[in-house]
Length: 249
Image (cartoon, rainbow, N blue to C red; front, side, top):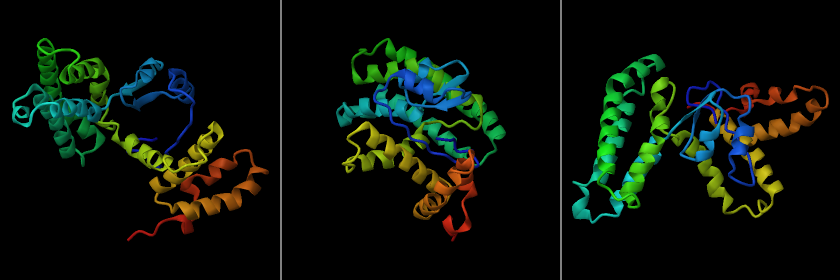
């Protein structure tokens, strides 16, 4: 999906039969820029012109999981709590920078957040030396240190985000519906679902009524597609008529 700064947002789903890195490479062919992602190793095999930006929500979740393994009376002063506290501080600072321009946010991040990141890395290296690698905390620390080059990459541009939550939220409707989709038990069914959900979620992102948008598209697209090779561009949400738009209160 597009980032939060996109003028015309797009959400695009694609079905693949496996999680092999080659699928991500094919999907992102000819793309150059930053890519927000979780810690999936397949993204780290992408060409150098694609700069993967890690997700601090995933890093914080690892520390929270480690915290939940401890007795309640031992949580407050634990290393897991300290790690989670560092991550939470970054989100708090990000919240305070929300209304700034991308240039101002870039500068303020270096001023306010980079010292927190520097302190966190020093703390993580020290904590790792006295933590069992296979413990929940050990796994959280390993994830943090392994993902570090990608986790700090959001500092490179004020448009980048601290987490991959924007994409995660776009995945949620598809995952929730999947439990009820009796027709998605084949690759063809899954591909059809991906197409329909791409249209619906992109319509919603652009303040269109999904039903009206689909009616307009399905009514007009068949005729135009036989006359114009560039027909699809005519049906992008930005070109939808006023009757497809949700009235603003």
